[in-house]
Image (tube, rainbow, N blue to C red; front, side, top):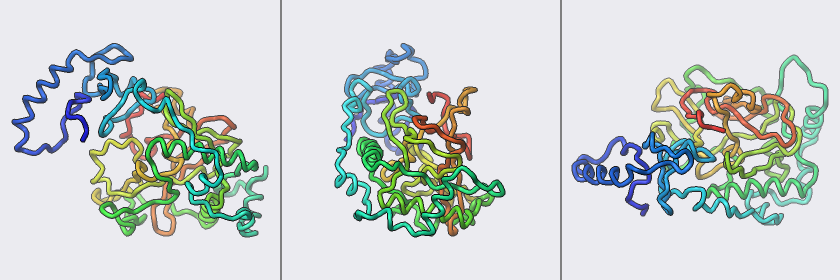
Amino acid sequence: MPSLRRRTLAPEPVSPMPESRKRSKSMQEEEEEDYSDVCCEKCGSGERPSELLLCDECDRGFHLFCLRPVLVAVPKGRWFCPSCSNHKNLTNFPLVQTKIVDFFRIQRSSQSAEKLSPDCRKRRKRNSGLVMAKKRRKLLPFNPTEDPVRRLEQMASLATALTATGTEFSNELTYVAGMAPRSANRAVLEREGMQVISKDDAETLNLCKNMMEQGEWPPLMVVFDPREGFTVEADRFIRDLTIITEYVGDVDYLKNRENDDGDSMMTLLTAANPSKSLVICPDKRSNIARFINGINNHIPGGKKKQNVKCVRFDVNGECRVLLIASRDIRKGERLYYDYNGYENEYPTEHFV
């Protein structure tokens, strides 16, 4: 059971049990007195106590927004400051092909690349050329790194991040008992309508999924940055309109997550009836999308960093969220998109 002493002076839960209110009041006052002199180790201020965390190991205080990477909400359970955290001793996933194949459930075949249909191969080759029709801008499939060893390194970097965060790999939306059923994911319920994916773009999306199942991976590396946490870099040049990944995780009703402190939830469906709105929760099952960081919406240069856009599509009647390159991306460039593309509720003012 988590420690009962307060790690933060954040407000109590919205609906505490009525019979516990009187009993807990004196305890709360006593705890606030005990920690009233706590100051942030980074900025030296004790102001904004509702955003001041206490480390469960050393009892030192840190503002959520002074930490690097920034925390957008008080974490559940025990929390450890950077000095006490085991992130500094990050264990890299072993660069062993069999372990990586098992981790990502890749189809075992020495000729996996040849399994792609001739039509898919032709389309992929045509889309990767220098000339593209201007009549309608079509989505492009990612272009995997040719070197199989480098692809293993890319996959191992994602496996390292997923393992460190206690997340299971999944490349599809998942529907779990007790959350929203798949039947709730109906694009027709979108309040202002949802863009229907074209036949060509749907085929490109399926091609990307098939390539990943067969071990042809997007040219992306997950790295750990002391200031930003896990973040994603392009490992080769990526063209504008390339599908980076689909945003996946457990699908749940927004009403069930309104008081959730998860910092990676994504809007899936905004229904006219709020009780039918859905979100994607990648905290237990996810892919590389979870580690692509957001821009700071409150500084002039924030928008300039954006090179990925988040687009929701109606795919065969269901809502899907794709992350797509919004311009050409250089090798080594980090990927960023606007967390507030559909609503302005995500607190990004302290993002790096």
